[in-house]
Image 1 (cartoon, protein in one colour):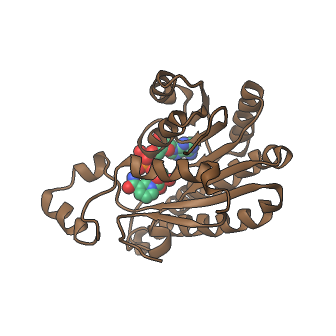
Image 2 (cartoon, rainbow, N blue to C red; image 1 turned 60 degrees about the vertical axis):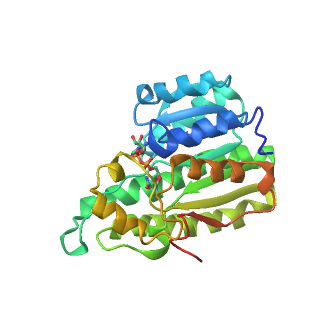
Image 3 (cartoon, helix red, strand yellow; image 1 turned 90 degrees about the horizontal axis):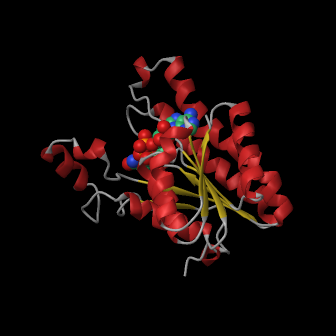
Length: 248
Ligand SMILES: NC(=O)c1ccc[n+]([C@@H]2O[C@H](COP(=O)([O-])OP(=O)(O)OC[C@H]3O[C@@H](n4cnc5c(N)ncnc54)[C@H](O)[C@@H]3O)[C@@H](O)[C@H]2O)c1
């Protein structure tokens, strides 16, 4: 149903975690993958897994916070693949701390990767998508961008900004048949959540109506839906993937 055969997808920060899961699901739906992370070697494992599905994967170094790095990597992708159909702005970092103690450097670092990164990558692919009269952008935000969180002022601002950015891009590019949506994951099971003691995990699960953490594939499945024509009438939306923790 979520058919992506021969589409070319760029997933930023696809060396591990949600980025790797998203890349694999897109490949399983038929897409070829332009994989990128801070170092090209870091996405090798993801590339091997994508190729095992029978799809093409190429690896690129790209620092999403650096304009020339983004321009160079996107130009190389276009040269290699000849088109770009899907952009998943997934790369993201945290530098948590209460506002009282948050340094300017930690504020800037998180905003640069999580928000400016999406701006730079979107700017670099939008001309190609507009010319093609087709394209899909999916931004990986967070429920924290909707509800805020003590100790994450920088992260919450970056993800809240990313959600507003998503709506604006959707409005600007709709006439060229380019859609832009965001996903807002909640607690997704990662090495980080696995390391928490049982009591803390249970306290977190008590806040989730579905009473479990999400799996990376729970996020990847929604991204594949948003990347496919099954969502052809959906743009400018934010889909929370959080077991019902946030209901808009
Ligand atoms: N894991 C969760 O529970 C969760 C919840 C909500 C939102 N998210 C969001 O999902 C996305 C992926 O999170 P994750 O948990 O997989 O994180 P992760 O740390 O496992 O992976 C992030 C990837 O981004 C890369 N990256 C970091 N800075 C980069 C830069 N400047 N340029 C290019 N790549 C860079 C990292 O090298 C890494 O491979 C992030 O945007 C995060 O904010 C995650």
